Length: 226
Image 1 (spheres, rainbow, N blue to C red):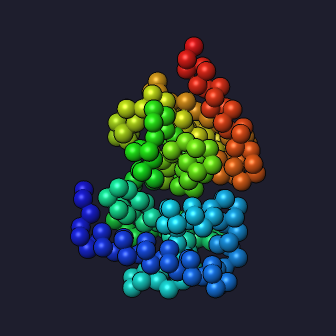
Image 2 (cartoon, rainbow, N blue to C red; image 1 turned 120 degrees about the vertical axis):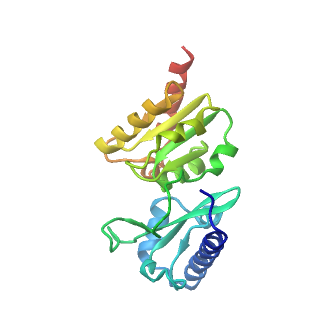
């Protein structure tokens, strides 16, 4: 279902406003330590933050008051902003989850621009930040599924034009289950790349261990060619 004009205007305005608030808070030294740590721990520098239009809700727009003090994560596409999520800087938001969003938003793949930037190979990760890490630090255009339960079977048709789809598995049981379920849905194009116990793509890249993932991807590629 297409976005209404009013919804589209809000998404564009909110994404732009909260990114500007992030830049201003960072420059003025008013960005909370939790936000600075989050970006540092996930290797999100100002250039990457601008590319993905990450934001910080310092002064909420009318109706967004419950997102105050959270990070904003827009879902960008060639047509503009199509969705917007917010991430708590604590362990959980008021609703009991790290992420929150306005009601009525449908599930979407994050970083859909990866589809247009990929060659014959593309990545699928669990979560938005891992998709950014794989794209920016592994050099593999990657789309993110919004959570371990967020995969929609209809999305497999999006991937039919790629020869290889690397599915990144977080280093825990739910993460591996997610990856193999997604791989089963995609079929023969899928190659699961398992992170070690307790790790994910962003944590490995932040620890300068991205080469391990690239090695696993290369091994998977060799198996494909046999």
